[in-house]
Length: 324
Image 1 (tube, rainbow, N blue to C red):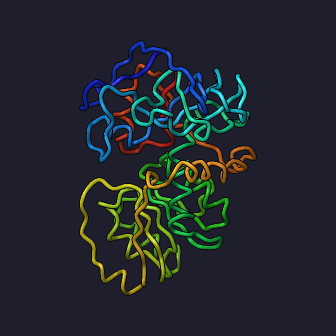
Image 2 (spheres, rainbow, N blue to C red; image 1 turned 90 degrees about the horizontal axis):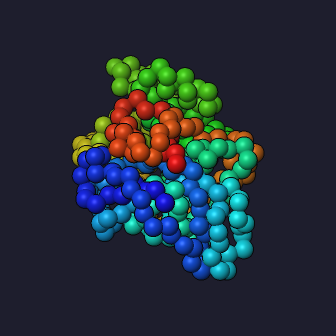
């Protein structure tokens, strides 16, 4: 098989396309001909050696992907050879991931891919939608009718959060940094699309809520926005920190005045059953059409380095996917 292999931590140039031995499905496992792999920011953090849990070298990056079942290990009865599937996680964990033409997963990491979705869209499901679902409903406990503000709504997690919040009956305010991003989130059902990073951003959001504030904020860049977020919350409002790239100074008195909460979240605290359960909760949405992953760009596997540069870039919309 072909795979992207990392022999040393470093810049995007360490991503090397190589021939590797074909894996074999063991008991309880599924061998997948991988057609597309999702590129997540965490992939780049690990590749750079800037993550808390690093795999032993060499390793194959990637967590999410989609393809066709090639064979089944003993004891697997939920899938059939030739079935279209997507997966989130692999049997080898961080050691042998999705950036490969053949991938072995545990059966609980594999899910049916509806015919209405492409392989690239399937590769955009795993981490982004699980993160958004966990942030909205596991941590923030968002309720129908509440106002939810999603910072960076044009990214893959942001778009997933928009679709989930809209489908749940929330009033959604989304922010994006470009006109293209604003147009995209409008097409996904946000009630109000606001350009972030301008002198008028805060006033515009406050005006949209009549000064009441927002109930939930899904925050992708807390080191830039967290202190401002606290001022935008309604009484009993919640900020969920999904992304952060540095230290931040806040005025903690703002949390006292509104009895608001700052909530961190990480998927990696969930066990296998819980992670699989998140996907099960969303299955009807993917099959029925209320949840549709947005792929922003598709690059061939040989351009994995370019994909890792792109995933850090500002103004990126939708999911970045590598195709086999």
